Length: 67
Image 1: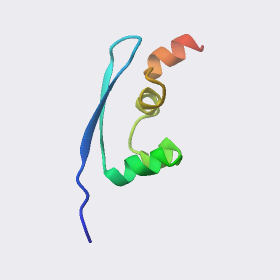
Image 2: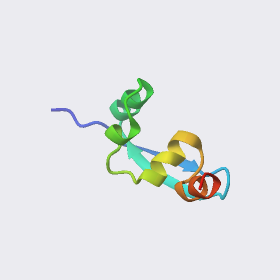
Image 3: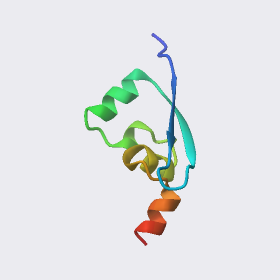
Image 4: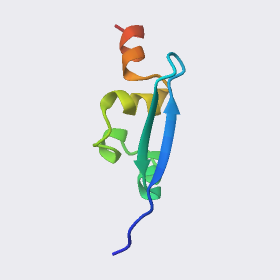
C-alpha cells in the first residue's frame, strides 16, 4: 500500500478575503478535475469551504448574495 503525499491548497474569498486551506492528494484533485462531485471527493471539508473552492466565494458571502 502506498501513501499519497498531501498538498495544502489555499483559496481566498473574492468578496471578503476569508481564507480556507484544505489538504488534498493528487488522486483527490484528479477525481475532482474529472468531474466527481466535490462533496464525494472532500467529504471532510465544510460545505461553505467547498463552495469557496468551486466558485471563489465563501459560504457566508454566497448565502448573503443569493439569500
